[in-house]
Amino acid sequence: MSDQIKYTLSESEMPTAWYNIAVHLPVPPPPLLNPLTKEPVTPEFLNALFPMGCILQAVSKDEYIDIPGEILDIYRQWRPSPLFRARKLEKFLDTPARIYYKYEGVSPVGSHKPNTAIAQAYYAKQEGVKKLTTETGAGQWGSALAMACSYFDLECQVFMVKVSYYQKPYRRSVMGVFGASVAPSPSELTEAGRRILAADPDTPGSLGMAISEAVEVALKEQDAMYSLGSVVDFVLLHQTVIGEEALLQLEKAGETGADIVIGCVGGGSNFAGLAFPFIRGRLTEGKDTQMIAVEPTACPTMTRGKYAFDYGDTAKMAPIAKMHTLGHSFVPPGIHAGGLRYHGMAPLVSMLAELGHIEARACHQTGVFKAAIDFARTEGIIVAPETAHAVKVTIDEALKAKEAGEEKVIIFNLSGHGLLDLSAYDNYLADQLADYEYPQEAINKALEELPEIPEMALAD
Ligand SMILES: *Cc1c(COP(=O)(O)O)cnc(C)c1O
Image (cartoon, rainbow, N blue to C red):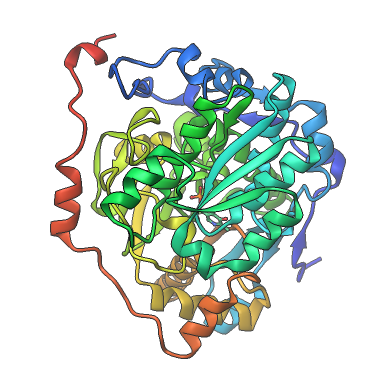
């Protein structure tokens, strides 16, 4: 078929293992540190927060980790997700590039997030946990975890970044339908929240603050654990089903791989999910596939942050990780891509960028929304504001290929649809979105508060 648009896999072709990129790194990744002692964390310390099933995955020496049958049974509800060839967009751009997108918006809540939410709820349930707490920005992660908790009959408490709580009321509704309780963060429900509110009653909130609140509740309540929607190694691992499927689908499309792999980055999980199986080709076969991680200029973690040890949250309760960071006290402006407003970046993505395997780009939001509108008008899908960052760079690269007359194969991760983000589109169409460059002085100030790490902690 020459003009095929959708490349699908049958349920029996779905990959049955996650890809553990850590084993292919040229040097071991730096350890996570205990925020109090600044010593490398022990599994016991992490186990106060996360299920052992997830912690052990992060230290596994296996290249592939089998996905438990019960998780596969749930994945099959929407996986394998389709790979689309963006033929109408290609025509509109008049580019010789072949553009593909992996569509994760087919999950029940409309994003890639259930790939890890289901896994985390499964392991928590197995270990006798009764309740999961978490933070959410735009609400996609909270929706995914709320759904997963309802599948596994777990209680779910979500701290939602205050600005998004009011900007995105419908994601709040989604969480409510699944039975989760949702509070705007910072809240009066936790010590961390009360302390932040006392210092700054009008704060818009941040993911770092919401994480502090969720971690506090998980540590205080006996049967509760904490769930994280991005950043940590096991979340990235769970997302690799995306890239494993995409490799098989590109093969079905007659491609030998991709020239450029693109994803937006908040904490790095959807990007990693698509990119890691392609980076395997770089690490083990010397392939030169180009990897581009796209972030907003309003939260330029990779392009302007520092690669350093920093706390995962504002109140310094979560583990310290070596990552690209804008400082744990960073409070980003209330841009619409709420899922891209975390101060840090996944340690594995950060390390691979330092090693030269990933490049980062920052985009302004008006250009991003323009790209999303072009995409909607050609391909029909209204993408999430986060995803629109990947669309922007995909279009930029396709136009570059046109200029150079090159038949590049470009694939991007369409991490989620934007049907609950229409107010952002309304604002764009009404010319009410402004570009925003985070001021250097503010970044410098937040970076002054990075923790000091004793050399001892790092001696192996
Ligand atoms: C949460 C989210 C993101 C950002 O998070 P990552 O961990 O960087 O993937 C991007 N797109 C969508 C649709 C999201 O829900």
